[in-house]
Length: 118
Image 1 (cartoon, rainbow, N blue to C red):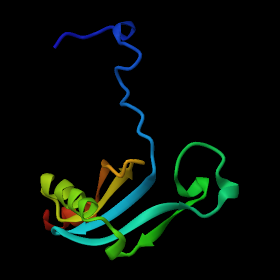
Image 2 (image 1 turned 90 degrees about the vertical axis):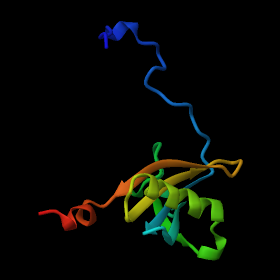
Image 3 (image 1 turned 120 degrees about the horizontal axis):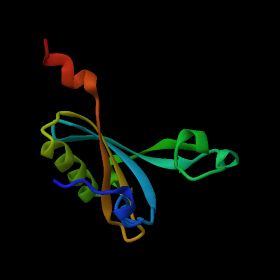
Image 4 (image 1 turned 30 degrees about the vertical axis):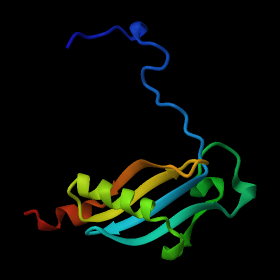
């Protein structure tokens, strides 16, 4: 593969399209079972001072009852873990205003991965 000079990159070579976020969701999975779903909720608006839905900016996770979680969301989470041949962890998902679910990241808990090593 030929190397490229930094000036040859286009402005958008390292960016993905912006996704309008309706909701940030974390789904916990264990061996193809849905354990629980949490959504990010702004609980401390006075701390929301910059971009990012995290604790420092006033967001916390709020439990969503299983019967209020769409099956497509549960399935997308389980598929993500099965694709990586993992047993346990969480999947962070973005829900768009059109109610599409986009996997943002799969959270791997190393202690569980390493338990059979050594």
